[in-house]
Amino acid sequence: MRGVTPINPQKKIEADSNPVKESDYYEGERLTHLLDLIQRGIETSKLSNVNSLPEKIWLKKQIAIGINEVTRVLERMNPNNTSDQQQNPKQLQVVIVVADCKPRMLTKHIPNLAASRNVPVLYVRDNKRASLRLGELVKLKTALAIGIKARGNDLNLLLQQIFPRDS
Image (tube, rainbow, N blue to C red; front, side, top):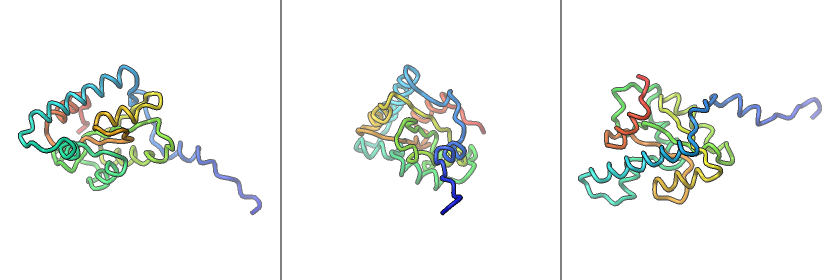
């Protein structure tokens, strides 16, 4: 096959992905503060819950955990959500993705999918420990992506104050 030039996959990935602003990345003290706020929101939501569901089941109802589940929930959402659909439990309020996962191909589709559904995406970086820290949040060893479901609880109110949605 003469005259065929090899494709450079790095150039294609950079061209396809949305430009990410540095303010979208959470690392260091800013990451610690964000994760502490989310952890407190989870705890207060859990305490205010009148149903005494087991913790893992309760977490699964509040948070989409893992790349596959986040992708599945995003794909089931209507494109370009409006604010009146915001409290639907099948909607995601915010998606948190580990920025330094390898291979990058695992999470590359999430930002574009979330942007088409008008869901903000936060990237966390912590010197190859971000997946461990995100996993601690949902009582697992590691997690590459989580999506907070819009269910109208204390966690959602806290996140709404931190990340106001553009309506």
